[in-house]
Image 1 (cartoon, rainbow, N blue to C red):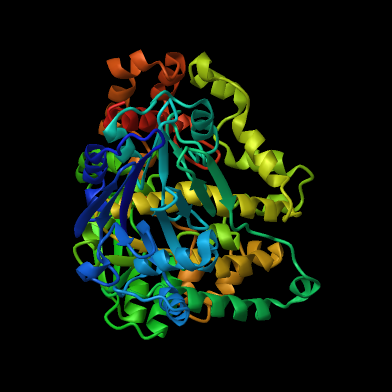
Image 2 (image 1 turned 90 degrees about the vertical axis):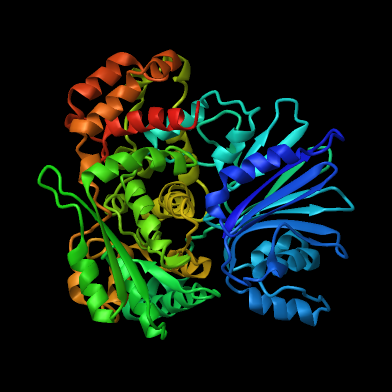
Length: 592
């Protein structure tokens, strides 16, 4: 795990070492164990290293194989790298290191861009071909590892980085607000689908995509994987018990794969079903001295701010070495600016602060954790799935339940220059009408798994853990497990209040008290009920000279939200004021 960056030029000009250094400096928290740079004529690669596999200097990056004429900068982990290495050695390739980075390099030499289809893991990488001058960029199937791109206005230079702020640090970026990006942020629950970001001049490589960029700047994108919900007759008639056994086997494999490391692996334990199941499977697999970590906050407005009773239960049941962190409200307030700085894009979930502060604690004990993100999207845990079983208009039903505003309110909220077509509804409609999913629940699960998941919970965990040099692995996003889950008829997933089939699996592993509890999350009540110093912080940002001169939001709308924050809540129970205020605070935190 680490941070990668680079620059390639298309006009014969030398690549900039100073630009590379600025990007690497911003990404230092992602890789505190080392750094490296390779600059050759019109190509420059930079790397910040977090030592997880092959701790020796032989695995340092950027990695070059002079004989193959290839240089790679790689972020992530290939869990099946040992099997691939054996296959490559059988084909005559020789290795000088023991990690997965060199396997990526040799796999590309052997199989070209098809190598990504063989990788089981999370990754973003850049490969430069010495002889052709070609640049190849790739991202894993679910976009677990980020990759941002910025091209200059003349098309003479391309930069890439694991972090959006790294591109900002170099300058020369068009930071005007992108219409589509803003619309998605305000409408699609702050999920900005690729290739968009909030800025006109920065894009992100979509998941499951390889971009091939020629020396003259011509680019071709190849999508190498898609999620299919088509089912065989056998799939439709298979019993719940048979599906339970298949899912249990798939989960065991997914968790075991993510134990691969040359350092200890812990678990982020919220006390919910998903993380508790990971703990149980790790203990079942024989992991000794497993460390688990939980965080809690002060209560606010009568709402409890921790779920320690459940995380304690799991820790005691499985005998883990458990660490709890309680965050007083005063520390949460002081930490929010650091949380904004850690965000590559503005993210409204209250979980950000929880994951940031939890990661600070965890990073002092371990370098790798497993985490439960993805189970709700993969196994149907959200409340908006059951109504889609009966509707004749899946797009309209999904938009009604998921989107934060309608188009009328959006026009009231933002400056008129940003009011255009309904990008978010059009996006949902287009995705729902792609082949491979017929049922409304399947359409929503596919959209949530391949888009919302990537640019909300997965991005959140990557940003907040990597702010402290901590690698987070997500077994529920093992692509073979996800493909298995897609074949399961939706009625098995949405029953029992959601995640029915996963609950069947869990009853074989974890205590019923955790399975039958109300659905939980990282509760941060102070950010849900914006009052006192939190309201002052938001008001100061939205009423600052910078915000007023920016003119992004219409002041009557801002005043309306400030007058009664608790009265303006989105369908997904988020604060509209926090959403607007966070955007402005994030822009100011990043010097925009």
